[in-house]
Image 1: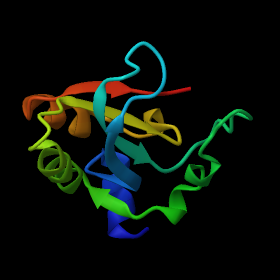
Image 2 (image 1 turned 45 degrees about the vertical axis):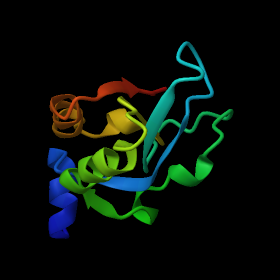
Image 3 (image 1 turned 180 degrees about the vertical axis):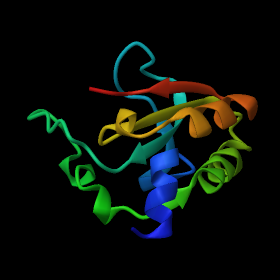
Image 4 (image 1 turned 90 degrees about the vertical axis):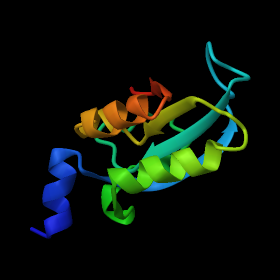
Length: 115
């Protein structure tokens, strides 16, 4: 097992597919400026999924949670955006506490999109 795989199991690293600033386009929070963190890997395989490219976690590099948080802070600094949406894939496949707790302590409101 590669060392980064062990860190994924603990939630210290996550298979990051992409992260970006945008406007939430779905659900109750439609129209809310948000920073999206898309985690790779899904064991559900919903037929309506619009990001099937996210299903195979092996295609997405294990990324330190600290890097994900730093990028969110930097990307939202000018806009004042305080909402982070964690989506996938299926993010609940992984331990999310290291990411969500650190995002909250950095002043973000965290939304988790899951199947």
